[in-house]
Length: 387
Image (cartoon, rainbow, N blue to C red):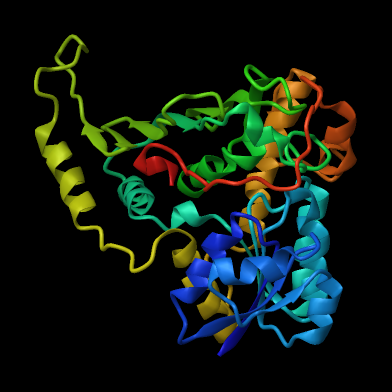
């Protein structure tokens, strides 16, 4: 029976606990830690783990418990230090997205896992979904042909109170705005499906949240060898209609699910009726997708538990988490410096270090409120591609 600790007992911790509870024959949540006085003890019953011991110090929890795995569900700026501490204590780690606000932090986390022989996984739960898995299977099949253009709409909506929470809305504590903390889901999927781009251009703004320093809207263009991908990152889109649309030479496929395949008349214009045979072949491949046994956080937790038990690489490791942060970093650098940024980023790039964003990023507005906690449930978007 694997012993699990949860560091951070805010709203996202609920998804971790529920995920572990799906595998009660394999693991047990035995400890909760939160630096807010009394919060871990209070949250035990709410999370359905009343038997878990509560701590207000990570060091105390790691010293007192014989843990196999911890979930880190704290603000992004704390991820690196907590992850390194757990790995050095001989505990495997599943850390929430984003992995960390800087590539230097990511590399320190990866090094700690390697040096201590531990497993490090970064949450990217949208890879564990039937709709995204189906889209990847179709792209991998080659039926759409070489990719020419991709539109990624990471469209979320958050009201002004969202940024009143103490750690949100500043470059120092949140590490960034919607590009880092919301669109990283879709950016990870873009990397998973297409690989890393050669270069990035971007613009950033704060269009609707006068109580936050950080951006609430960015638009980036990713340059591949011949293809382009447009990525909109937003918390200003009413309805949260999220989508990934992939245009290939032979067909277009997208989630929410849609397939279109055009063929040319002799003059190059699209022929009426398109290519029904190719559409049928793609639809048949999609229909043959074998549903995942567990989706979302539960799906990733299932994989991480198996990795801990079998001492193997998890499906999503620290390098995967780092690649997503590298792409976000390139978007920020391109938007702030107003130039095209080539990938990969080197350790000599100023934006590799943690302090550069804090130093150079624009403060669109001043953060005007700082509350310790907020009531209400987490909502995760209005379309299947949002969850």
